[in-house]
Length: 235
Image (cartoon, rainbow, N blue to C red; front, side):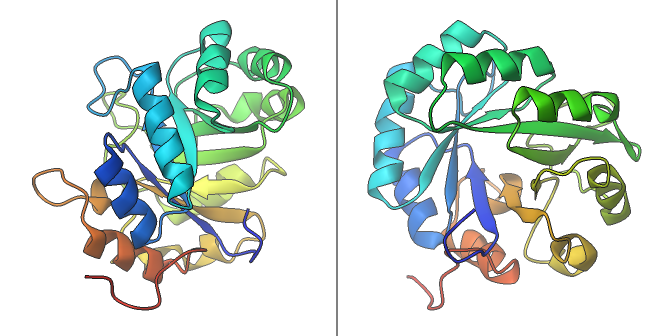
């Protein structure tokens, strides 16, 4: 969390220094950099991730390595190369992977584990205690499509399903799943939860052509009252 105690805004999928600059100036606290997501539209090589991590920090935001990988030695190597201190395990990595990553990168690492909700059910519910004991710092709740597609789906979660899932953990949580400026009102009860830590967006931060737009990001930041949300319109 931030020094202000305000919730965080993470925007996922930056692929250039221009993306990073736009996200940071528009109010993103965390910038998601993809690595180990085969076929992902925003996949980065380790050197490119390192360059964008440097640019993110220089712009005043925090880089987050977002990955489907469970290869702990490879992930640890990328984290050391890039200097990234947040890692988001976005697929079905097991608690043992969290524990091994903690052992491989023992100092200053924040581990975010995604929980997948499909048809109202949190698929990782039986493993929540094990994830906590393994060293997960935050959970991120995201929607899983009926066909099993993970991440950046634009599919909106039901607030009641989110609240039901987080009652089984004592960790802070981030919210994802089709969030936008327009649907903030549907999540009043989630935002009021004492362990709510912020939101993660991708699709809603982009225009119809898939490009990030400052107007969309600023609108999301203001609507959700995130930590670095701009008070004044930026051209």
